Length: 231
Ligand SMILES: Nc1nc2c(ncn2[C@@H]2O[C@H](COP(=O)(O)OP(=O)(O)OP(=O)(O)O)[C@@H](O)[C@H]2O)c(=O)[nH]1
Ligand SMILES: [Mg+2]
Image 1 (tube, rainbow, N blue to C red):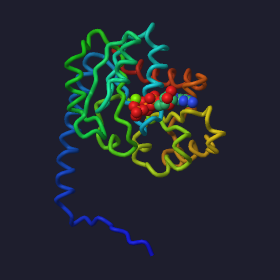
Image 2 (tube, rainbow, N blue to C red; image 1 turned 45 degrees about the horizontal axis):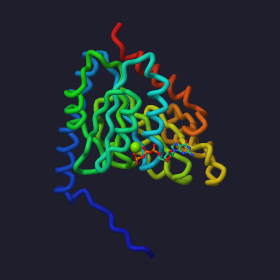
Image 3 (tube, rainbow, N blue to C red; image 1 turned 60 degrees about the vertical axis):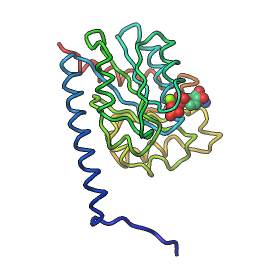
Image 4 (tube, helix red, strand yellow; image 1 turned 30 degrees about the vertical axis):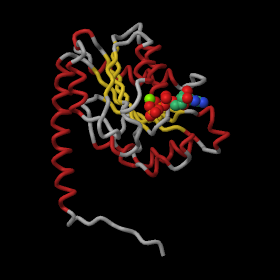
């Protein structure tokens, strides 16, 4: 028998701290959203495990969008400037969000990045969250849509094991499908697990390497963006 330690509701010191933190974040997220809506700006938050392909997907979307929309990109990265430099080299205004906790972005940091962004000149902000499939789910940022990028190289159980992440998603991208066969992972099984959690969830298989599925992702995000633009 393997011993299990199950946290109990009486452990209130943990719970009280977490609740007030989450409430404070939710309030700031609502303020971010109000500010974005006021300017007719859409923000989209890209979450997913380390290395799932968030930055690569954002670079592909920047290529697709940059002639039709005014873009900005916020890159969550606690340790390097590699991602933000890559995006900046595409000629898009960027802000690096270097978290202290290293495991998720929060609405306070995003609010500070908004202060550094000329919202009158931006239509769409793509936000790369910190690589993590757990904590970011609890910290809304004020975005209009949340995208989860899961790659076949993470194995077959990632969707089942992280339900909160997928329940909070508006779009799931199953990336690196070019490697599915060699990984022995069935894309259809990952999609089924996502739909078991949330039947109406939009799921798009992609390969950022071959370009498969990227037009469908772009179309879905464009629809979200257009719905946020002031008439
Ligand atoms: N074969 C293949 N490789 C990919 C694909 N998408 C991304 N990669 C590669 O996967 C690696 C990680 O991609 P990133 O875009 O840096 O991943 P990330 O999610 O931003 O990673 P972190 O910022 O560290 O959390 C890079 O070497 C990419 O070139 C894909 O669809 N197929
Ligand atoms: Mg990245």
